[in-house]
Image 1 (cartoon, rainbow over the protein chains, first blue to last red):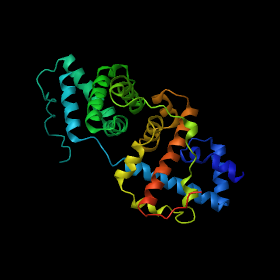
Image 2 (cartoon, each protein chain N blue to C red):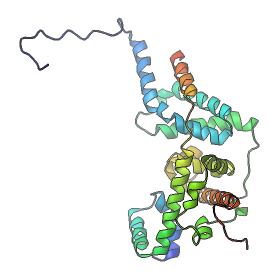
Image 3 (tube, rainbow over the protein chains, first blue to last red):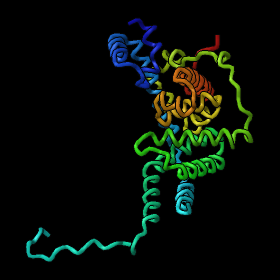
Image 4 (cartoon, each protein chain N blue to C red):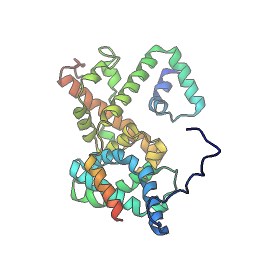
Length: 74
Length: 211
């Protein structure tokens, strides 16, 4: 596999959306290609960063209470 | 205390409430099932509501209405299937029908005008490990997501924050999987561009001079 093809599948690979065969091919390429590995590691970090930072928000406790009260009235 | 053969038989199970009548108990069960399978996704619904409406008060109303409607049609939900996706679909329909009309104009995005931006290429010499991410505060990340065009924002939120698969995102948004992939790709690149501009403006990274 060439670097270009590998990078084309970057997000599908990180999102675990590839076929097992293609996933294996990419894994093999990454193990042998340092620049691609560094690129993939960076994007992994980016996605984790977005997830963790945006998940700090949660529903206010008052909203939960209101919904529970509402269910009881149903 | 170990079991003793001479001890008296255990008393019959005493009902905690007097003579439960069947309809009341089934309503109870229905509520318990709903709490167990639907209410656990409250945080995710609230976050998606926030990203769609852009303010806490509308998000709360939207989520409350979503939960009410979901509860009323709870019998149509098959237990053990994807409750999160089901709830998000209800929330999104409600948003489109009840909220979007009276808030912002529906955005149209000319996807081709979005320049491809790859953050890694910009920072790979200066900070290939992405250490500058740690210096960006949460609010700034949320602001960057909120600034994405709606079609990209909801794809990024559902996939990258709430962890839905391509297939699940496609179902919620009612678009083909290929559309989800392209929206995610562009949304992530746009988000990277915003965060890069911010990090450069704050001096977290030097960045490269514009060509």
